[in-house]
Image (cartoon, rainbow, N blue to C red):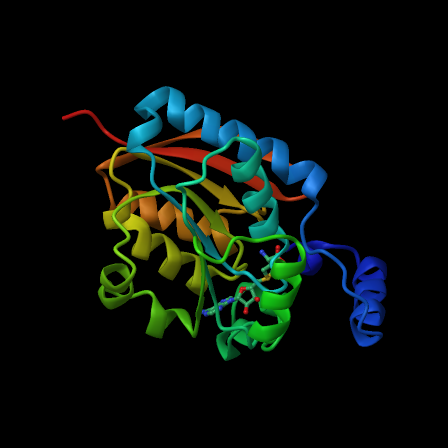
Amino acid sequence: MVRGLLPESANKKIEKLTMDNVFIPLVSSAEIEPKYNRAWKYIIERIGHDAKGDYLEFGVSHGSSLSCMHRVLKELKLNDVRLFGFDSFEGMPESAANEDGGVWKPGQFASPIEFTRKLLTDRGVDWSRTFLIKGWFNETLTPETVKKHSITKASVIMIDCDIYSSSKAALTFCVPLIKDLAIVFFDDWKDDKDFGEYKAFEEFLKENPQFESEPFGDYAPTGKIFVVSKKAK
Ligand SMILES: C[S@@+](CC[C@H](N)C(=O)[O-])C[C@H]1O[C@@H](n2cnc3c(N)ncnc32)[C@H](O)[C@@H]1O
């Protein structure tokens, strides 16, 4: 979500709407859905329908991007793709105060899991293939979670947890799950390799030389997309 990168006037407006308990989506469906659609078509073209994996999202909050993905999968009749959403549902962690210039605040974007579930139910989400995993990433991004849900492969990954350390934890968790290739969405990309999601991605690529990446487009206002593939041996 881009709030931290928006001008102060826009932040104030969002603050007010949040205080008034008016629900505002944190991502633009008009922007993101065509990109999700293109991502799945690309995956299937490259590796085939039967080889595709699941959708993993890091940073769910009210579930806007998760419901966009659900809608796209339904449209494309990709009914066997599962959706996993990881979030504390208590907002940003304490460490946000000391990262990325303090742009994001501890507790920001908190959305009780029951509220998010209701919003997703209202938007027709199929709970037989959608899983919300509640907790701080250092407790949930574990081999036990992978085993519990039999996650073997991630094909589309959404990094929308904003700060550097959370993005890094999410990408590290995905390393063994990127089998051939995955498309990785970054929702809060700032063109500064020492900041947030960009910094985490740079480190991930450096620490995992088995992967290479190529740009796969962007979306307004701060989304950036990459194909991450295993290098040929
Ligand atoms: C901008 S919001 C996600 C917006 C969401 N994708 C949407 O479309 O509504 C970022 C989320 O990341 C979560 N988050 C960030 N770091 C986290 C961490 N270390 N552990 C668990 N959740 C985290 C926050 O709780 C917050 O809900």
